Length: 315
Ligand code: ZN
Image (cartoon, rainbow, N blue to C red; front, side, top):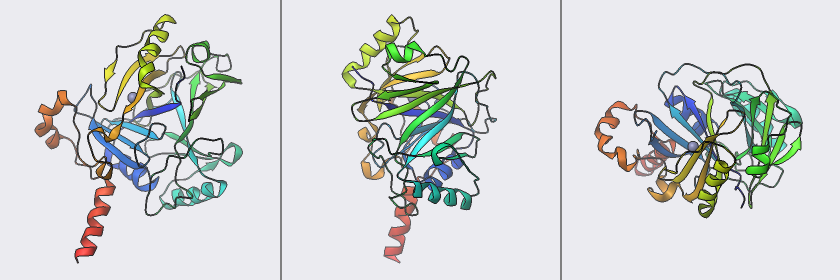
């Protein structure tokens, strides 16, 4: 039994419009699902990813409108690493970010570091390590430079360089030394690392809420049993409509989720119009009229572009 790498990473934002402008318009990801937080339906839950919304490409945000900026600290993820095809892509993104008003710096092995509008730490790395590319199409981002999915993430911890046995013995990560781990699935892998920190963080806009690992559907209950047997408190299985999920805190304090690969984001929308209509879970469908009034309307850039093209054709 193996985890299939990353499923998704979920953050908090204070502004859904800026969220769509940054991740869909500037970074060129596809907004693949527009729904609400299942536990707090007054808040948006927006999902971005590749064309089909494949696990491994998914970044999601809970919007708490006007939320104050948080700060990554102990037991929190502080940087997300997104893959791009080549070193030339790094140059492309450096320029595109600059044109969009975002400064960046070069990191290790020529990576590109920057922060989003909420201060979330991002790093573009050349994905030359075998992950099949998971890309979205965008009119201003050539396919040769488009983001290829998530390659890794880094978190803060005390005792960062001490091997964490829950990761290795229970979840099947390999320890590479110096606080660095690698999770190998059948198709995809993911780099995970702890960095030393003393400072306590603060959950808020621009911080990571949780990170979800992908499980084969048939293995999901066994993962739950395994975490429980290791002495962890793990939730019951939650039906998230697009996958089933269990949650637990790993020993360094980071909220982990294990999510099933099925049924996926095309279960309640056509692939063509993914992420365009407001989708509500069954239990909150009765709130639709109210939520359509109270949530700030968000137009998926895909729908906007299609209307523009249709307008040009008919004009
Ligand atoms: Zn999640």
